[in-house]
Structure formats: C-alpha cells, structure tokens
Length: 393
Ligand SMILES: Cc1ncc(COP(=O)(O)O)c(C=O)c1O
Image 1: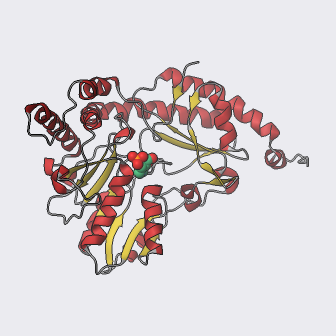
Image 2 (image 1 turned 60 degrees about the vertical axis):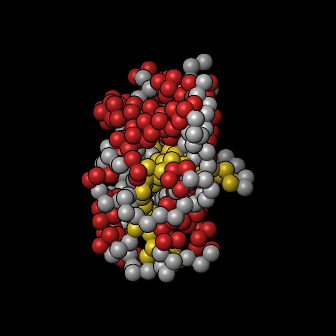
C-alpha cells in the first residue's frame, strides 16, 4: 500500500539530496573536526560550509549560528540563557499555545519561583495583543513566543512583538521550528534576539537543530563542556546531520516559492473539497496568517483518533488534536486555549503537507475521508442526538 504522508509538522522525509550529502560523512570522513590532522580538519571545513548554508537561509552571520541537537534544546538554551544573564529579573512571558519545548519548561520555571505570563489567544488562535503589551514589565527577563503554531499553522507577528519587547529592554526569543523553510525568515530585517529551528521539520535528519543568537546578545551556554561552537555548546559535533542540515537549508531556500504556491494550492484544494463534502466541519485557526502547508479541521461529534485509525487503512498519515492522557482523550492545550468546543476539538485532524506531496495524495483523502466520517457518525450517539434522533444507551 502506498503511504500518503500528510504529517510533515510532526517530522519530514529526509530529502534524497540530503542523504547523498551526508553519506560520505558516515562512511569515509569520520574524523573529529577538532583534530589537528588534515583528516579531521577537512570535516571542520564541511561544517563551516553547512553553517554558511544555514546562515544564508536565515539571513544571519556565521557566528550567530549555534548548532544544537534539536528544537527542544534550542528553546531551552535560549530561555535559560536569558534568565542567567538577567538574574535580577524574575518574569517570563510566553503564549498559551506554545509547543511543550517552551510550555513545559516555563511551567517548570514557574514551580521554581519565576512568574510566568501565558498570553491568551482568541478563537482563531491569534495572540491577544492588549494582554501581551500589558504583560511587558521592567521585571521581564525574556519573551518566548512561537513564529508559527505547529497545530493550526497560525503565524504570530513576532517581528512586531520583538519591537514592543525591545522598547521595554526585554530580550525576545522565538520558536521558529515550524516557520523556517515554510515562510521567509530574514534576521537582517527584524530585531529578534534568538530563534530556534529543528532539522527534522525541513527534510534534514532528526537530532540536529540550531539556535540563532544575534550578535551582541549576552549568552550563557546550556551544555557546558568542550570548546565546540566557540564554547557556546559543548559536545563533539554530529557531523553527518550538520552536513545534512546545511543541504536541507539550501533546498528549503530553493523550494520556498513552491511551498507558497504548489503546496498552498494543494492544501487549499484539500480544505475546500472536504468542507464541501462533509457537513458540520470547521477549520481551526486563522486562515489569513497561516503556514501554507497546514490544515487543522474538526469534524463534529466524532473522535479524531478513530478518524486516524480508519485513514491509516488507506495509508493516509495525519495527526489528531487530542492526546490520550491517563486513559482519557484530552483535546490539545492549543485547541482548548482557542475555546474550541469539546464536540469539535475531539474530532480535529491536522494535515500538514510538503513539497513531496502530489495531487494524487490529495485526491485520495478527498475520496476516502467523507465516507469515513459518515461511517463514524452513524456510530456516534452525539451525532444522532444532534440530528434529532434518540441516542441509544
Ligand atoms: C513548534 C515546535 N517547537 C519545538 C519542537 C521540538 O523540536 P524537536 O523535536 O527538534 O525537539 C517542535 C516539534 O514538534 C515544534 O513543532
């Protein structure tokens, strides 16, 4: 059975060109880039080449790129560094819809005594700007707000948010894990101090990420050890993955237009056809400022997990907006923050596309999903009640 992979916000296929670029660094060039000999030194040159490609995608300088192991490490490093450099300040600002890499860290810091403001969003997943501005105080050490949301694709006005934070002398970090490679990011044109990205979201392998730190920003390392990354992140470099990330950044720059035309068109067709074929469905999140590859859609009165299981029989891969926590299905914190009603939130599915999807992939979902929804609704007592029928016990 063919796999129709529409879960690219979870992780992406490693591009063939990326694998090709990595292979020599797994097979032949295994030297340590810190070694004095030529054999290791040539590996160091390849890392510099990869760093140049990463910097170029971000509009950054070479020294502003710190290579890490993942988006989570980058997020943790940024926030902990800001706190370490502002020991007299005890307030952190973030949003209610962050990825756990930021959310859970901030909750942990709240338990340790920091005051954390989780800025709310509206029903479309847009940040409450009044609440944001009101939360900026002289005691705020750092703001960490994502560039784009992983569940809904909603894009936040981070460049504007960073300016507002700077007016109050506050550092601004953004988790751009879902934004980089999908929408243009140019650090020369904004005032954001720190930015996180993750390789496996843009067709590089898992286990490599980047923290951008603007020149002049005070920085404290999270991983203390060797002199790697100019003493800003100890640990022998994951050379093949770094080389792969460089290639993936080069491809992302080349594919940016396709992402915003071809991929957007596929996503829009999927959205339009599903909404036309299926009653009682709703798009979650703003459709104005949204990543071109993401569609989060709720089918009322049924469970997202059941939809996923039935789609799986056709090889269709997507995600649901509910997670099984201690035996019960809970809608995600993102949908809850948006106030999506439970009957809708439980039936939410996230489709996330990439440049490797085809029109045939979308055709398959458009053909197979409406009967799946119909089948599940026949079994749903809530659907029966909503249609005026008596629900059976
Ligand atoms: C918005 C966002 N931030 C951070 C992460 C964590 O990245 P990583 O898996 O590389 O740790 C993810 C991964 O899903 C994400 O979507």
